[in-house]
Amino acid sequence: MIRLTTLWTPARQAVLLIALVACQAAAAGPEDDRKAFVAYFQARFPDIPLAEYVNGIYAIDQDSREQWQEIEEFPPYEFAVEQGAALWQAPFADGGRYSDCFVGAEPGVRQNYPRYDLATAEVVTLDLAINRCRKKYGQAELTFGGEEMLALSAFMALESRGNPISIENPAGNPGALAAYEQGKQFYYSKRGQLNFSCADCHVTSAGLYVRADRLSASLGHPTHFPVYRSKLGNMLSLHQRFAGCIRDVRAKPFALQSKEYRTLEYFLTYMSNGLEANGPGARK
Image 1 (spheres, rainbow, N blue to C red):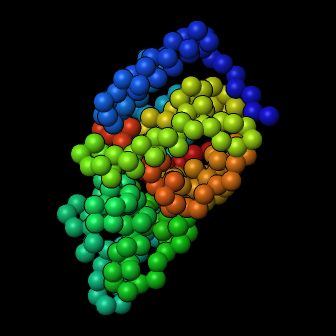
Image 2 (cartoon, helix red, strand yellow):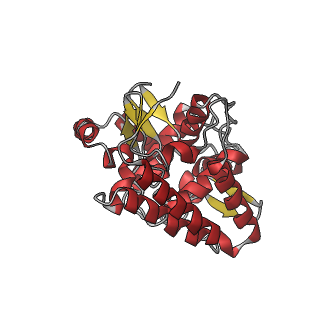
Image 3 (cartoon, rainbow, N blue to C red):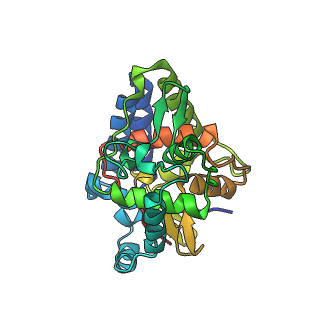
């Protein structure tokens, strides 16, 4: 059974939660949602600068932060970045390259994904865009969550560091807004035998303990993926982390890059708009 050890008073928790729900109920659209989301965490953790949320739990847990900073001196994700750089630079059989698909700020485009594609009426993540590029030039698609996909996304994430997350406001398009709302509904819906939602752990219980681990805040979550997980000994995508969370509440995970996960990523990334891209990361 998961036990949450409180570090703050139930009364304060209730007041902040009611404030967040009230703001969202009265919100006119995604930007109002985002402002309420940010305000909630700033009230919850008043001593944490907004920019620090890109560091996940290490923005909250100072003891773990010191260990993480030591790990970052010799980043365990370097091998993936090097592999990704080699893949990026290698031309396809017909002479095409990844840079032909990501024109402009390539390969530092992580901050622009996910995005809503008007042509296909769907949310396109960076992983999906990579495979679309490969298909365009006659290459076999990479496995989502596979070594090469993780390496490419790690390299592109590193090249994007420091760029502010810049997701276009979904309110400007009915299809985009519908996708955003689907992701938002997923985020706040309870599921599994434990009857937990994403928000139960990473909003109302952020900073509290689950056994020996503290729960990170949702704000900034998508900014540092993919990550190297020490306990797994390999890289992990954001959608693999989604799947792990769903398993933890004893529900059945969806397929990587499913519509459910893509709209969830769309919602969460928009909530972090303006924060700097900070991937790849290292986590316990």
